[in-house]
Image 1 (spheres, rainbow, N blue to C red):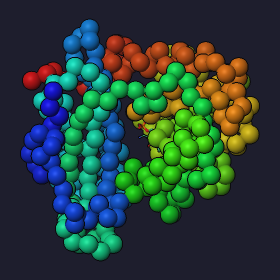
Image 2 (image 1 turned 90 degrees about the vertical axis):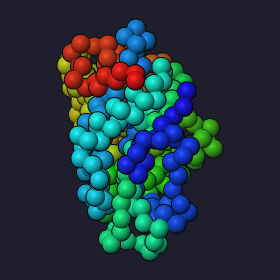
Image 3 (image 1 turned 45 degrees about the horizontal axis):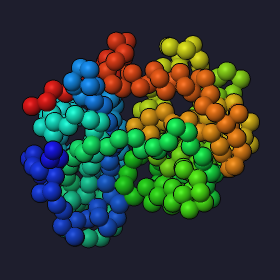
Image 4 (image 1 turned 90 degrees about the horizontal axis):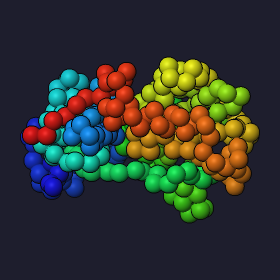
Length: 305
Ligand code: PMP
């Protein structure tokens, strides 16, 4: 099944969408991207794009920070995304990657006096942290300070920090990194937000702890409150609290809700998937696939062309 791209205002086969070697963003990391999933529902024979609008709004906000002028409105990008997924026609889980970037073939570090473009492509992508439960290690790489490279902005350039943390974690025998903030508080994984369960409540780092404000994070907080009656406290979390927690899990578009069973070689709780984590995983899996009637407003259905 061929993948398609939306590139330079046209849909085309993915392999035909190419940028030149002098393209500005390739050199300076001056792009804003998103990671979105279209989840395949085999019973309904339909894909559902999860929280498309919110992802594109986050992209548009990031573009404001980088001075990038999107050639399409948020609504127009959402429509193009639906068209693209429909065109690809995959009967499996698909990952959608929009990217807005400085597009001039004209080097020199800057965000002014430069052209911009927007592209998007889709490809089949299954589970990201492909394990029932993962081992994490606290990284020697901290998240950047807001006035260094704002972590709330999903810019391509900031992902050097994430890649350093991820590879360090893998080289040290872990599945994923947990990065601390510049102040030394728990921040997030290399591609996920982090939650702890302590005394029956959810705890997660606050936006001021140098995190990307995840859409899965928000979804899980809503689901915990509405479906389990569990509140989430957003606050600074110390490293030691990671070791005290009863349960821990990571959230992200790619990673869904992934239980963490060990941190820095210490078992989280008894090292098994905790009850709150398991319930949230189960509810979230239904919600993103368009199988939970209460949350259909989060799902954009796509009908194959
Ligand atoms: N933090 C980072 C650093 C990420 O890359 C991601 C993935 N986009 C997340 C958190 C989770 O965000 P979301 O739930 O919106 O995918």
